[in-house]
Image 1: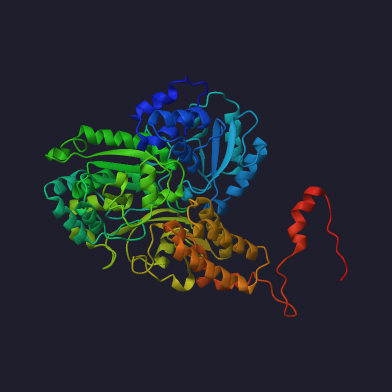
Image 2 (image 1 turned 120 degrees about the vertical axis):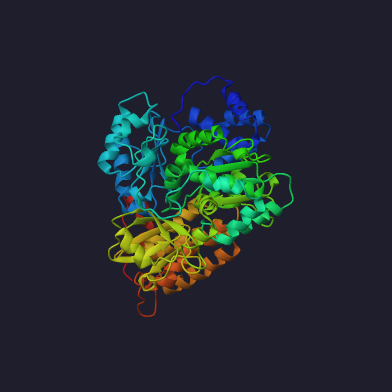
Length: 613
């Protein structure tokens, strides 16, 4: 979201729609641009967009209301989105939040009277390795402290021209392409360990050249021989997914790259997009050739919009080199191009059917399956959705061969894996390790001292205790999409589980009752225990409800959201038991009237009256 301007001409929305060919599938791009220029997408704007692209008004309003970066109400000229995930809170984001509220005289969720500043929280912005962090409009600001946050706000308050926030707030650029003229971000890659596959030496274009010398069926066979499994966490065999997509009925096919990593503690794709964009786009092109697609879409999370101009530049370079467009690489009959679809702040869009809906210009609502995307995906066409790391592996497999790739890792999990490591460690960042590495070895790499637990696979993964630190990271043991949070001795794992549940409550699309209601009930019961009012029966309640939510939710979010409860109950039950009320005389109080009335008494100035029994 760039700083918006006021007083646009009446035809500006029409011009924005025309620039996107009045295409309803580009609705998210249209409303993002209107939001950027006007500061909101109000009722009149919604009416005009609906008229211009020929959709019901409710379709536009539904999109605007769904994504957190969009609003029907005006926001400040400067929107500060402070990340408040678990790691950022561990690093002091609450103190930063308090200093911002004190300086601006508003609470989070409010806008200053002069309309200049808005304060909001963000669940994750992909910067857990350099927390606390915030987005100031589109600008990423890392390693914030209360002093630096206040100084930045004061600088912004003194100027009227906000077109170049970077000049005002950024003192130095990060490493690598973060300092590129089209990026100029204060972000650091924190690439701690380069492996042989993703960050090893590579010959740009070699993988695509070899793929185009083969038939699509041969390319798929080579990927299947490598035993490459999707790097998103589920681990579905990539070659098999491509085979299904190519064999499905339909005249057109689509390849979508999921670059919407939005789970707290995940940031590996950020580094690939910054330092290995050619490798990613080469992998997408190989995939397009293999499945018979003419269209590729890179779905880029809204928090990474600062990389968009750089990525568009790389795409243009590839077009000029004949590596995208008509007759790619001189291959007659192979036309393939890639467009970037920006997200707008919705974790659920990491789920592949929700992502497809978003690419089509709709809300990020998951679809019922079957049919699966390989059969009926984007615009009801056969579609393969692969993530960033998977597609980079594809390019290297075609370049170096399936045997080379499968020489890394373990029998059931070939190749390397990128880990996004954050939390209580001295060296947070991205590590490329062979599958089969143990958690204990990872702790040594990242400088984790006195670890209590590791959250493997992000909040939707599992909390692993000390007796399992010699387990291995692979699909047959500890499967992970890449996020790994370290928690030291003394951390309250029940509190961490409650914070993870708050994330899932906030990010649920709200479609199905188990996820919409069940996760709220789980969070409430965790908070009851944390407040000192928990009973032994609450643990049985939590486990029963969590299993029910997993079993009956519609999509992957609801099916994995209860994992923080289940894994902490299984591996840290004593941490729960220490927080429970100890019954006296066989009785246990379940309701404390004085605690319940405390807030209202504070507001009214009244005191509790205690009567003798």
